[in-house]
Amino acid sequence: MKAVILAGGLGTRISEETSVRPKPMVEIGGRPILWHILKIYSHYGINDFVVCLGYKGYIIKEFFANYFLHTADVTFHMDQNRMEVHDSMAEPWRVTLIDTGDATQTGGRLKRVKKYVEKEDAFCLTYGDGLSDINIADSIEFHCRHNELATMSAVQPAGRWGSLDMVDTKITSFREKPAGDGAWINGGFFVLSPKVLDYIQGDETIWEREPLERLAKEGNLNAYLHSGFWQPMDTLRDKKHLEELWESGTPPWKKW
Image 1 (cartoon, rainbow, N blue to C red):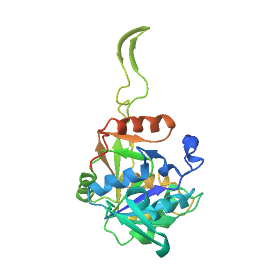
Image 2: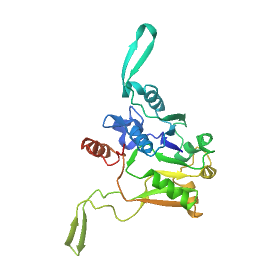
Image 3: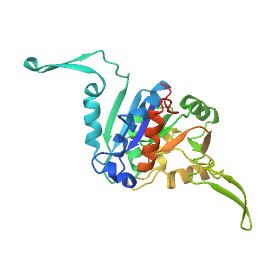
């Protein structure tokens, strides 16, 4: 099975980082968040990736072109114009990097990689800026069992502020940062039939609007409920939180 990664957005809410690199290349623990996402899928045996590039996509190309320089010891034989890699621990990945346009919307990016997934029975799709301890294998099994066109992981984000229960002006209980307000939201980590590509008109189509709204209206969109860890990296605050989790030695998304 293949996994498609949307990695072409501008990342304006974390512009302190994305002014010089695409958002998926912002580092957590010294590695791009994109690397962490690929490692999550690879843990479940998915090693064939299609990455949808846009803003500063050449930086992602350069990262994979020079992957051994990032992950292994090397010797350069200058007189032979040759690089020797020592004790490589490279993953068994096949990474296809596709320029899908700087201004293309999320649905349009997916439509542009149609030829790479249209012959699959199903494929995975996620965003290049979010981490989770979701069980990818279970979500795929869930998708196949329900036999709908699309499965979306649904998550309940943690609350950012404390919650008060009150009677008039008297506080009856206080909970520091409760686990959301009970609402389920789109957590990414989709499993899709290639037939969903027919729901996308072109570059201006936003995946999260017309296609998903139509799939839901037709009864072709299922929710795989994930109550575990999920964290997007939208702001510097989010990045700092993910860094702290990595430095703790037990980041919840690290299954490898």
